[in-house]
Amino acid sequence: MYKSLLLSINALCASIAWAQAPASSPAPSPPSAQSKPSVHWEELTAAEFRDAIARAQGTCLLPFGILEKHGLHLPLGNDLLNVRYVALNAAQQEYAIVFPEYYFGQIFEAKHQPGTVAYSRRLQLDLLQETTDEMARNGCKKIIIVNGHGGNNSLLPFFAQTQLDASHDYVVYVLGIMRGGQGEPKHKSNPATDMHAGESETSMSMIARPDLVHLDRAPQESGADQARLKLPEGLYTGIWWYARFPNHYAGEGAVASRELGEFEAKTWINGIAQAIRAVKADQESLRLQNEFYERSKHPLDTPQ
Image (cartoon, rainbow, N blue to C red; front, side):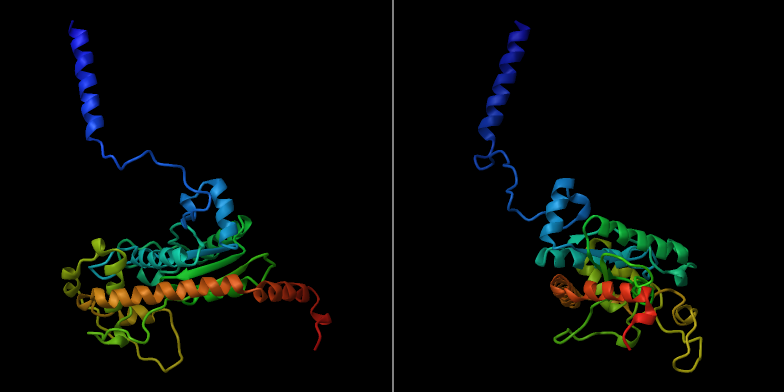
């Protein structure tokens, strides 16, 4: 009797639940063979990856960031969070495969700040070379390194130049940070010192990861140029950044705005999408690269 009662109650509950289920929620159908695959490398299955490489015409993005202090109001991984945001959105516009999180760049100038991870110069170059080699082995014959960190501005062009040291069956392109332009909203801070976690970068972060932006904390630390080093124009030393901005903060993050951030994000996304299209159409770089490799084996035979 007790068992029969339980069965009856269970059946009643099941029928009520079925009656209350939305009529417009059919079982999910398998994805169409024509649907666009994810742009995230790590989200693709092995079979999908093969199709994605073909769709991308062998073009892949490597968004490049860092782990470093960004004032008191932005996260340590801010550069990568921002550059991945724009790279992923650009790849949706012009299909390309986006490599997973890559934080392994140049940041020696911030080693005195908590949370900074600064890999040795040899490891930086070796890891980047092996990463692009592995990307190419998997079909990425056109690799665009999309830089999101100012401290990589010298490292990445140098890395691209080192690709001429030994032959490769792929081409490395480097795309710098893209901000500003015609129609940009008026800035509230001095553009000359708006260099790191200031108005522009913070505005961008308000679009990419608003949940990690703490504007109320920005005024608690100075982002002013302390100008502690006086050297002639054109004379460089690695301590220049620390001499000017020892707090590892340059600018005024507190005056950031979503309006400026939306402009910055749109400008950057469109610039990356344009670069993807140009790289897909580029048939000369690899041809010239191969010609160079061959001639470099026999320099005395090179026509003068």
